Amino acid sequence: MTLVLLRRGDRFHRIVLVLWALSAVELLVVGAVVVNDIMSGSSGSVPLPVGRVDSLAAPGYLDSMLDRVREWPAHTLTTLPLVIIAWLGMWAARRRMLEEPARHRTLLVWTAVLGLGVAVTGGLPAALVSAGWLHVDGSAAETALLLHGGSGMFAGPGYVAVLALIAMRVTRPGVVVGALSALGRRSLSGYLFQSVAWVVLLAPFTLDLAHRSGSPTVLGLVISVAVWFATVLLARLLDERGRPGPAERVLRRLTYGPRPG
Image 1 (cartoon, rainbow, N blue to C red):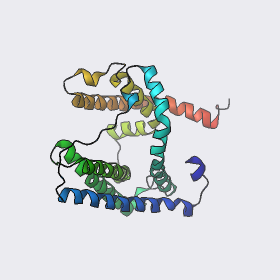
Image 2: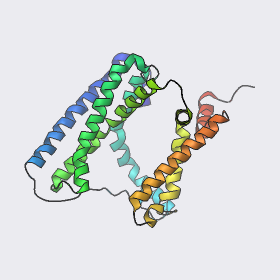
Image 3: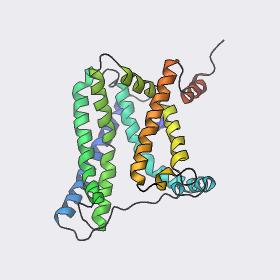
Image 4: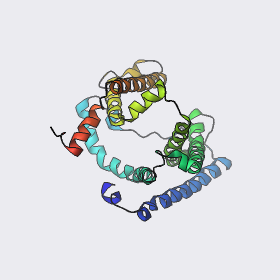
């Protein structure tokens, strides 16, 4: 992505808008297929297909590492299309849409409405099947899951646009906004902290807390919220001391070299 996108002009970066438009057309086609399957009363009642990731269920850390080596080539190929999500962020950054939201208010409103609207609508069939409120056959279930995955990428721009619109209304940042901003300035450290926390708390070869209770989903949700709040708190404490996140410090050192003197 870096080799393709760096040092490019505005005309080149507008290609990403065409790609998102094509993605929207693809979703319309897939959505039409899902609606047709539902309206035609496809027989059967199967759950959503769930793919197994061996590295996540590995009994030991070494086993999980070996599984990841095998999973890496296919996983990389499946994530390559996600480049267009980051590319859209680059396009928006070049126009300072988040730094100057007032200038782009109309576009942000449309992005919020359409992005979240597409994501919620596209994920609804899969949600209904998962909840047992909609009964379809295997083919329809797979198509609903495909629609869910494709529409989900529109949620990211939608949420970002909502946050930009909220930021326009914040005139006096308080404790909450200050803490969230502190985490935003240390987002890489926060991401890495959470990644380590998931391994320690949830992996089968560590504490495996979620599966030690009668309701893994509920406990997993509680753990995720607690870890996120811990991340915010740590970022706030670093901010009060005027210190960057450890990962940001390392990244800055690698990028710009040691400070002179």
